[in-house]
Image: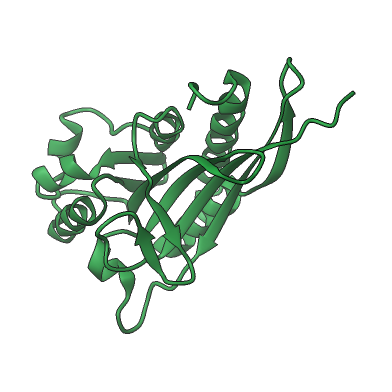
Length: 222
């Protein structure tokens, strides 16, 4: 991202996401009774209306963060086909609206993941097959953590093998790596109308979407 955006813009996106995760962690107890509610609360905390940033050379950028809660139950529930609960997306657009860069990071949610979870291992494997990348988010009272789906699938859902005697990385750190383009897949995004992943082989949509957009706007100063 830093090859096409000013450092201050990338830093502002990262800082907003980290602040949103921290706020969601602090309010965990209020939605802890339901996994979807916890995920939804995280999305609401990360949500951000468009923010205009002006760099030292006068260039202006508008960035925003969106959260969508999508269909997760009923016949043909997309999660069953993709292994994903949701997706984080970063878009960068030119003044004309042309896409310069777009990345997606799908995820599966779990609350208080303990021991060996074979269903989670299957979901992680499905997510890796359908999207090529992704993370598992573990919501706990002590904080939110994340693991790469490949590690979860390889460990057959055994948390201790994934963590290797240590704590899993904090979700805020993992999402910072996504902003820095060390995680995620180029060209991956979600179409809410067709309920499908685009530019992947995924057969259908996910149950949650986080969408971060950056759009360069015309400089009217001077």
